[in-house]
Image (cartoon, rainbow, N blue to C red; front, side):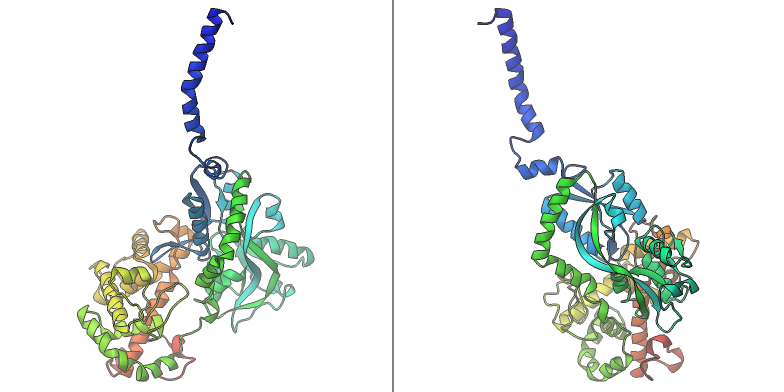
Length: 482
């Protein structure tokens, strides 16, 4: 037996250890956590319980739509975080180079913002699974002068985004074609450069095929001159210290793909891209004769009920569905007024495919938006602003008004918002706004098309004086006479 003083010391130490043991269990989680839980609390993410994701405000990754946060990559990363039981924290950055720097500096778990897996990046970073194949393409506007091949590029002013995979590719090509020249920009994204090409402000640019697919819906005259490289995979870039995260991501992705979720997501964001074209006015004029008489009494009924011109409701409905009561989009909006499931539920619409219910719901929702537009707008302007909000969301309308004020422009006129809304897609403007990026040109075009339909409709029905008829000649020039 040990000496008495030593024995007392051992007993005291044992008692102390017994007191500390429950605390150590609580701290390590050994008494209640499964192995997967312990992984999530330790090595899976930088901050236990939170998945920190870097992204960009671009249509193919992340943006604020009419019903909140959305985007192809956002929807995917949200599904992954939910499956892992992690809280999702989104950090929006302005450029790919900023994303790479943040990952290199251990400030996030994942970068998900239209990143291609290239040999250069693979030497520095680790990647998740490939989720889509893309190809760099030289893009120009239809019926305009453009390069015929790589060698011909030296004769055109080519602009691409700075520090992008496009610039990487051009640097490689310049080894074979030393006369190749181009300019880079930090001020415009690939989407904005496509818009400039469409507006004939630039002769051409280079972009990924998926970005062109999305933008062709809004700029259908954009054409591909030739591919600039082989196909490349898009993938998420991961923090190099998060190998367990990479393993979990691959496991989740296989299940996500096998269950058809990836295919469904591709359909939502890209399924419509190849079918977009100019509105066919000849079809519209024909349907005024054949379909409108069936639906006109319902448009008139709910136009009176919600104090909205019935021809405006009819024009908006045609823009949404071409008066097809069974219309369904890849994003899940349905019916002659193309209501989302959420909006229909809020308005008490039980069956979106039932014509009268759909028109009632659409009129009610438009009335709600009218009532949210400041009374400082003239009445016609309020209608335009409400329709723009229907398309882009009221939050972005508030941002546009704030931006108009900061630029010393009158925020209470639609003419001002027509100029301001497109600025929401430019980094130097949206980075200081609450809701961030928006494809601001889209609601402007949306409103103009509806007004165009309404004016043509009222002219055709004899409801509009010839001297007050206003329409966009570009919209109907290919389609024949009124």
